[in-house]
Image (cartoon, rainbow, N blue to C red; front, side, top):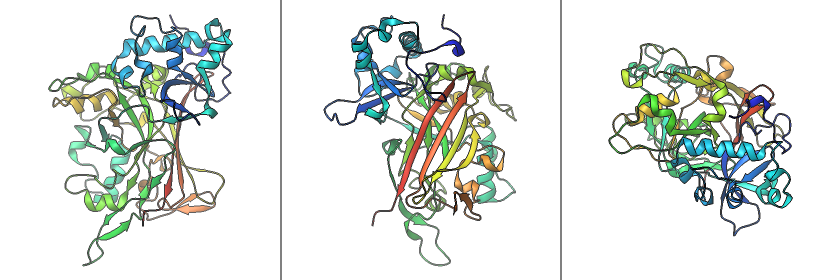
Amino acid sequence: MAEPSQQLRSFVEVPAGSHFPIQNLPFGVFRRRGVQAQAPRPAVAIGDFALDLAAVADAGLFDGPALSGSPCFHQETLNMFLGMGRPAWREARATLQKILSADEPVLRDNEALRNKCLVPMSDIEMVLPITVGGYTDFFCSVHHAMNCGFIFRGPQTPVNPNWFYLPVGYNGRASSIVVSGTNVIRPRGQGHPTGNSAPYFGPSQKLDFELEMAAIVGPGNELGKPIDINDAEEHIFGLTLMNDWSARDIQAWETIPLGPFLGKSFSTTVSPWIVTLDALKPFMCDAPKQEPEPLPYLAEKNHINYDIPLEAWIKPKDQNDASIVTKTNFKHLYWTLTQQLAHHTINGCNMRPGDIFATGTLSGPEPDSLGCLLELTWNGQKEIPVGNLTRKFLEDGDEVILTGCCKGEGYNIGFGTCTGKVLPALP
């Protein structure tokens, strides 16, 4: 039986305040800097190091029934491992916590093996950890839905009646999902015409970030066979931070009648480390009460969210420091991850390992907890301070930094950062 989380301690020195102690061990895929010939390799994060899972497997340290002899950690993505399901995930987590623990000598006392397995973060670059076959973006924050409704439709019916009966979502563009640190080129497109003129065409003048989280699918389901709401957790591997970059002017002109398209599909950034649901268990909390009660296929025995404090920062081009612009929390999510997945498949839609579904913008109830500039500036009607500057929407050279970190007793479960810098539109 595993030790209580607060008692776990690694022989790897983990700096105070690190997002990646032994209690976390998020999964990602890395490549050594300057070693072009080396294929990407799966890893977990521990302090300021990446633990190379291919090297761990080569040493014969995965000796349990699910992972012994498996090639899953010799792949260039995590998709094979994701498809193996929770028994393999838990076996991997237990094995890794054991070999990294302070009282286990197998790595601690074997310098050659330790040097082969533990790679300093400063020597690596992270790559997209999964091949994303499908990406769905939901719209599951009631505060975000209310605010968007007020901005675009007025106070009469800010939220459409269907919103309280189903998790609203749309199919996003999987091909433009990029890993943290990738620059984002300002998109071009059409905007609302002024008066009797033709629609505006050119670089987006209302480029925005969206503070979201993305769930990574593990085992999928057969076409035509929905995932039961009370089994849905077994199909979710973990969570990453997500910035669903949005061009609000392009989005506003194109959205009716079929929803977002070019205003969203130009880029979506995810953080490189996937934090498992097992690591997040100590931070489970009650999800908001739902009224009216959900239909039976969405009524779950365990209606839970996770207490994950989240922040968004902006670092303008000519400033040395980033400035915080919002603080919110995952726990405000109205429709839970499991409800989102059950709804996604109720019509028989098949999910596959590595598919992503995102929460939508995670806004809270307070003015400083709004998860995008659309809400913070009320669609550009006011400015917000960013250091000694102000912003209505993002300007060229701005870098957006998202972060999230759960605070445990003597340890953190963090997500690192999800960053992207805005580059000028192509001529």
